[in-house]
Amino acid sequence: MPVREGGLDQGKVQLMRLRSLLFVPGDRPERFAKAAGSGADAIILDLEDSVSLANKDAARRAIADYLSGTREVITLVRVNPLDGHMTAADVAAIAGARPDAIMLPKAEGAPSIQQLDTILRSESARDVSLPPILPIATETPAAIFTLGSYREVKDRLVGLTWGAEDLPAAIGATTSRQADGSYTSPYEVARALTLFAAHSAGVAAVDTVFPAIKDEVGLGAYAGRARRDGFTGMMAIHPSQVAPINAAFTPAADEVVRAQAIVDAFAANPGVGVLQVDGKMVDAPHLKQAQHILSLAD
Image (cartoon, rainbow, N blue to C red):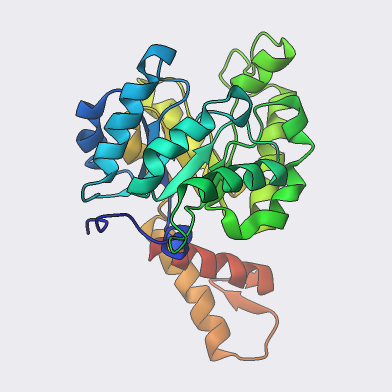
């Protein structure tokens, strides 16, 4: 169903299931509709890394024009980081068109959210609720030590995500990945802390991008591990990545059947703490996991 003109309100966006979030350069408006039709649960119109300084103004205008129409999917805008003195110009250009959410790069905990909110309030009408925020929460060394503070601003978040490129550049590391594509130890820590920070705040935990566009097998394995570990979705950099990501974050039929069996067993035996389902013992954590799987299937 198309998103209504003017976007969704904050509460509805925060309740949306976001398996796949597809980046689109903000200065390539001819790609916006294709991205929206890719099957992604959300698209991220980018004003930061994919747009050169010379094209920032053109990208702002293109995004504002697109947002002013009827949207087919949840539409976020990634603004420029707060320390670069371009965030206010980004917000001024797009706030009136009401993006469904704002992605904030190089965020450093609750203070960054509060600073962005100050900018948003200055550009928003009084009777319009502020769009929720999706911080990229690990792109500076200082950011790692602020991850727990997102609980303080959880009502302003649509989720938390992390990045594996800016942080190594910030500290002079040569790479964040092993030869086989897996993360080196420092970046495994950053990933895990983001995962736990998101769940601590009660918001979506969104894994970072998989940069090898043509490696569908590798992407499927990566996305599968992300869901296994507790992430609820993942970002994409090409439309071809959307279907494998959606598949990875959608429970298989046999998972749903077993989850339903567990839920039904506890419903049929109220007050019982431990049951046997298909020859295996299950208890309260299994019930919680089964309920989560059924919510994903819905």
